[in-house]
Image (cartoon, rainbow over all chains, first blue to last red; front, side):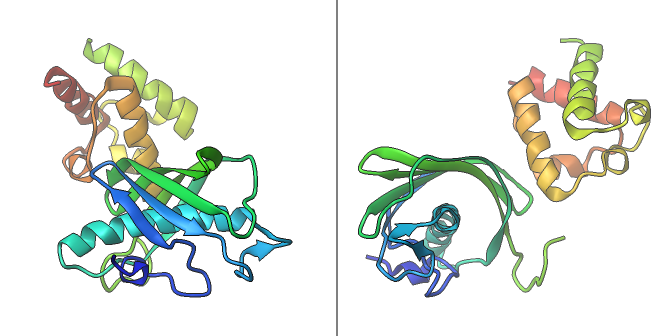
Length: 142
Length: 82
């Protein structure tokens, strides 16, 4: 199994993806078990920013996974825009999340994805997100 | 679909969704300068084009389009090749 840190540019303590479960041309599913004491856990639940970051890191893992197949390193990127956010419930510590990101569009260095976070088959959060991938050696986007 | 119909649809969403001044949209007007979109907005434009015409544009497509008239013709050409 590939170490997730080889696929994403994020590093502890803000890593919010454990493993890539499946990935194909259109979508990627990751898994993450909410650990006690995580920086984005408060009062025993993963807060909203953690859920959105989980989706963003799932998108990063998707990009990193496909780059790894070409023998390339993961690219740094950032969230350009978030829309259509729906969060129905916050997962408790110990919950295992399965997050699926589906690529809707790709233009220039920007990818539009739809992210859906599920716990036990129940959708608890979803949104659309524009991820901007940094060009190699770039310090900011054009 | 006629060129006028394509132009009406495109101009409609540019005004309604991208807040482009209708008066600035003329066939010979420069597309990129008139729209003044950032790269994130282009993603939305690609989504709207796909939703309205069923064709997908790429970043390279925009490099070859200079005016609104060229944009309309490009979409007509793409739609005809579906």
